[in-house]
Image (cartoon, rainbow, N blue to C red; front, side, top):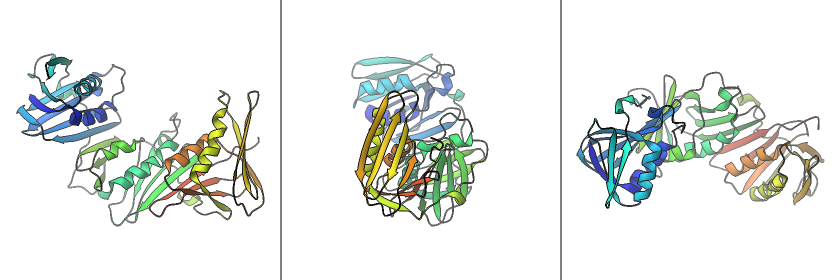
Length: 369
């Protein structure tokens, strides 16, 4: 096979593929990217590991000899970065141990794997039911939920994001057992789909489409497949049952307050001034004219800060993980957020003040401190 493509355009696709590679060097076929040039002016870049796969299209290339080549994604990424905006030619005779890459007097040999050794993954099937959703909305909802998954995978489903597509809404949720992030956007139509998948960076979805387009979402066996006009990705479903959270989300609370999101981020940031291994107890006290924060790190010391608020209720003191609040606030984009609190021992909520999305974070307090 042999083709010529712009290195800068190829780099975008190779970067996406390289992000899937484990980097351990133990299973080469999971750390390689396949370049498939079957059309005269079209290249397909694909990669897969044990959990996810991606397939992206690059038009506008020149194919001299059709075929496939399978090379280490990290090595290829270094090469296309070095080539910058040059036109780069890649060739392989189908049998040699190395593929040849050249541009402007530079020549590089890359090791190869047999193309047929690429791990198979689910492909979108237009003959089976699927839902079509705004791509930007899917990406935005991922951003607002994926940070809340359980990082240590103690429970498989808590290590993933719940994706629900109904006739009237697209809803994503994530929880680690101590907090819950739910984000949804109203929709019209769509085949009902429900799955739990590993977290995906919003930029993965962004790479599948052009601005303003939609993506098709399909449940195929044990995989969730998302297709856009530029490419598609497949993600293996996580085993187990996601918690039945819907009836336990307090979308409105009797005692709420609206605050500037940036002001609250600045307040919470001050709790992190104490860097300790043993953790920080962060107390928030809501009073008539002020929200007072006190971060206590036993031996290391304390940090105190406050911001002006208009709290028309009786004073409430609550112990919350300040990192949970910080992550929730930074996932949102509205100028203001709505805080809800009933007592120091009940759930604390943060809602995004948005007409486009319905977003809530439910954070359980630390009690007994």
